[in-house]
Length: 104
Image 1 (cartoon, rainbow, N blue to C red):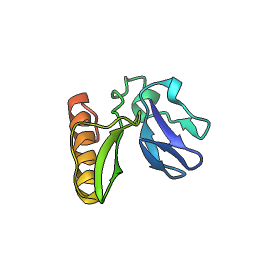
Image 2: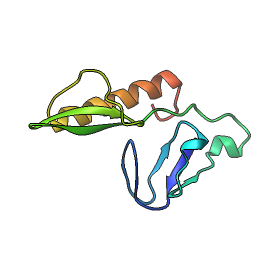
Image 3: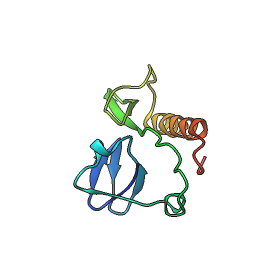
């Protein structure tokens, strides 16, 4: 489900007002989010499946890892902040490609 942030909030990573992103279900819709109708939905077509969010997080001692939208650590990756951000972006792109997301 595609949503837009009405206020600052956290879903996988910090979201600013106006950010548009996907959540996995309507149950995850927070009070700071509002549903967004995609052009495909307006035209009566099926939207692309939602893609899980990934975000870099500080593990400690200068090391960073990657968590999913549920806050669970993803794999065994540990590296610098820049490497963790790149890994999170790679995971998102990989899922978007597998889901046939139009932005991939």
